Amino acid sequence: MSTPERAFVAAIISQAYADMLGPNDDHAFPAISFLTTTFGEHARWRAHLCALIDLDGQLVAQRIVNGLEGKTELHALTTEINGRHEQSVERARERWLHLKNPHTPPASSV
View (cartoon, rainbow, N blue to C red):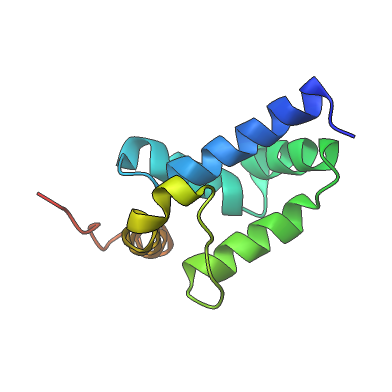
């Protein structure tokens, strides 16, 4: 059964996922950190929010890391973005590599 509160929490997590795949680095890097980190404030908030909608925050993080590392797919949230989804995933994977290796500048589209 869905409640407005559960829908709100799901929207927060969905927005972070969309930001991770989106074109704006200023939104994407914090979203990747929120969705993948295993310790600290972001991990605690993700675990708390995921628990509110009966998800395991650590499992969510691991699945996203696996997708960012190319071990599994990162799925599109809606069919409207499927056309450009592969480009978004590639951009997110480049950002992930930059976060793991901060001395390497991120690829620029400019």
